[in-house]
Length: 269
Figure 1 (cartoon, rainbow, N blue to C red):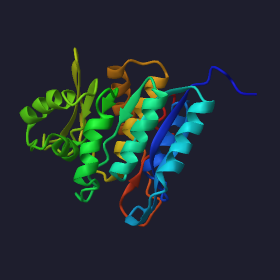
Figure 2: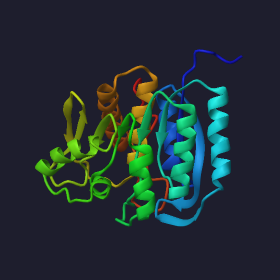
Figure 3: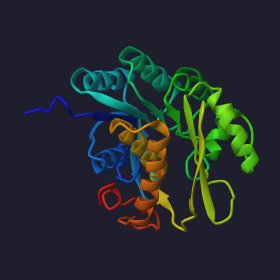
Figure 4: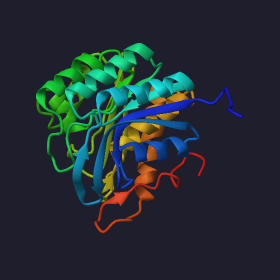
């Protein structure tokens, strides 16, 4: 029998056949937090720990059907956005969200691959800026993604602090600027800002190559929002979770890339 009090989190993102990133990482993260996970798949990737070999983007009408089906039957506490392959997909997702009006929206702007390759064309980037960021609960870019969103370089701590204000001006209610790409010695600083609060989450720089860290962090934030935490605390818990998941990572493939240890890092572990 269904429990009418159960809160669900919805990930709208790409599928990783290797199980390390995308909706697979999102659903494991939701489960580790005790939140029911839903998914709407924006793209199918043939992927493993050594790279992506093929991508298939389903018709946007089918994507909309997935999103509608989730909202028709579940109490959704937060929506997390990941890989959105094109401007057409972004507009379809934005239209669906405008129709369903989720209470919390976490935008992980997947725009730059780990290799440095750009994943979004200019029209898709413009659609992301204008259709998804305004009114979103939080956007969680890494440094290269923030540079693309803002059209300027971020090379030091002062640039990163200024970027927080510029990202807020794009319309999100909060920003978590991930600091892993910024050279700040042996420390990684993830910077949080909203209209009234600034926080810096500091941790040691781990000498590991983890797969799916951005997906997992955004999903952990969404899960914590479903559990009733405020935005800043949801981010703090999410940062703690991703560090624990990296430390508990495994190497199921034939590369040195870690798949995160989601359940070893669960909050009640």
